Amino acid sequence: MRISSGTPGVMPVQTVTETAPAEAPKAAAPAASAALQSSVLQPAVQALKEMPDFDHAKVAMLRDALAKGELPFNAGKLAGVIQRFHGGQ
Image (cartoon, rainbow, N blue to C red; front, side):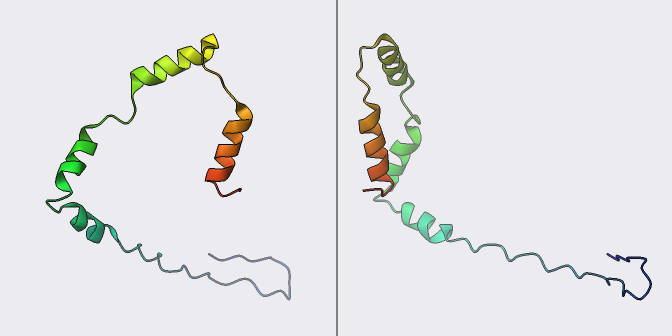
Protein backbone atom coordinates (compact mmCIF):
# COMPACT_ATOMS: atom_id res chain seq x y z
CA MET A 1 0.00 0.00 0.00
CA ARG A 2 1.41 3.37 -0.96
CA ILE A 3 0.16 6.62 0.54
CA SER A 4 1.45 9.95 -0.66
CA SER A 5 0.42 13.27 0.73
CA GLY A 6 1.16 15.30 -2.36
CA THR A 7 2.70 17.99 -0.15
CA PRO A 8 6.22 19.05 -1.26
CA GLY A 9 9.00 18.24 1.23
CA VAL A 10 7.00 15.52 2.94
CA MET A 11 8.18 11.95 2.44
CA PRO A 12 5.46 9.62 1.26
CA VAL A 13 4.62 6.59 3.35
CA GLN A 14 6.13 3.47 1.83
CA THR A 15 4.74 -0.03 1.45
CA VAL A 16 3.37 -1.63 4.57
CA THR A 17 4.33 -5.25 4.98
CA GLU A 18 1.69 -7.71 5.95
CA THR A 19 2.29 -9.91 8.94
CA ALA A 20 2.22 -13.66 8.69
CA PRO A 21 -1.08 -15.25 9.65
CA ALA A 22 -1.43 -16.09 13.31
CA GLU A 23 -0.49 -19.59 14.28
CA ALA A 24 -3.50 -21.85 14.64
CA PRO A 25 -4.28 -22.78 18.25
CA LYS A 26 -3.00 -26.19 19.18
CA ALA A 27 -5.74 -28.70 19.78
CA ALA A 28 -5.93 -30.07 23.28
CA ALA A 29 -8.98 -32.11 22.35
CA PRO A 30 -7.19 -35.32 21.30
CA ALA A 31 -6.05 -36.05 24.87
CA ALA A 32 -9.51 -35.34 26.27
CA SER A 33 -11.15 -37.31 23.48
CA ALA A 34 -8.93 -40.31 24.15
CA ALA A 35 -9.91 -40.26 27.83
CA LEU A 36 -13.61 -40.28 26.91
CA GLN A 37 -13.14 -43.30 24.67
CA SER A 38 -12.31 -45.55 27.59
CA SER A 39 -14.58 -48.53 28.12
CA VAL A 40 -15.50 -47.25 31.58
CA LEU A 41 -16.95 -43.95 30.37
CA GLN A 42 -18.42 -45.16 27.10
CA PRO A 43 -21.87 -46.09 28.53
CA ALA A 44 -22.18 -42.68 30.20
CA VAL A 45 -21.14 -40.87 27.03
CA GLN A 46 -23.70 -42.82 25.03
CA ALA A 47 -26.45 -42.10 27.56
CA LEU A 48 -25.67 -38.37 27.41
CA LYS A 49 -25.80 -38.39 23.62
CA GLU A 50 -29.26 -39.97 23.73
CA MET A 51 -30.68 -37.42 26.19
CA PRO A 52 -32.50 -34.36 24.84
CA ASP A 53 -30.96 -30.95 25.49
CA PHE A 54 -33.90 -30.06 27.74
CA ASP A 55 -37.36 -31.34 28.62
CA HIS A 56 -39.76 -29.43 26.36
CA ALA A 57 -42.84 -30.62 28.26
CA LYS A 58 -41.48 -29.47 31.61
CA VAL A 59 -40.50 -26.07 30.22
CA ALA A 60 -44.03 -25.62 28.82
CA MET A 61 -45.55 -26.65 32.17
CA LEU A 62 -43.37 -24.18 34.09
CA ARG A 63 -44.09 -21.39 31.60
CA ASP A 64 -47.83 -21.95 31.98
CA ALA A 65 -47.60 -22.06 35.78
CA LEU A 66 -45.67 -18.76 35.80
CA ALA A 67 -48.20 -17.14 33.46
CA LYS A 68 -51.11 -18.26 35.68
CA GLY A 69 -49.38 -17.06 38.84
CA GLU A 70 -49.29 -20.58 40.27
CA LEU A 71 -45.51 -20.56 40.60
CA PRO A 72 -44.02 -17.95 42.92
CA PHE A 73 -41.24 -15.84 41.45
CA ASN A 74 -38.79 -13.98 43.67
CA ALA A 75 -36.63 -11.69 41.54
CA GLY A 76 -34.41 -10.79 44.52
CA LYS A 77 -33.66 -14.43 45.25
CA LEU A 78 -32.87 -15.09 41.58
CA ALA A 79 -30.54 -12.08 41.50
CA GLY A 80 -28.76 -13.35 44.62
CA VAL A 81 -28.27 -16.81 43.14
CA ILE A 82 -26.90 -15.35 39.90
CA GLN A 83 -24.57 -13.06 41.84
CA ARG A 84 -23.30 -15.91 44.01
CA PHE A 85 -22.81 -18.18 40.98
CA HIS A 86 -20.76 -15.56 39.17
CA GLY A 87 -18.57 -14.84 42.19
CA GLY A 88 -20.27 -11.74 43.55
CA GLN A 89 -20.51 -13.12 47.11
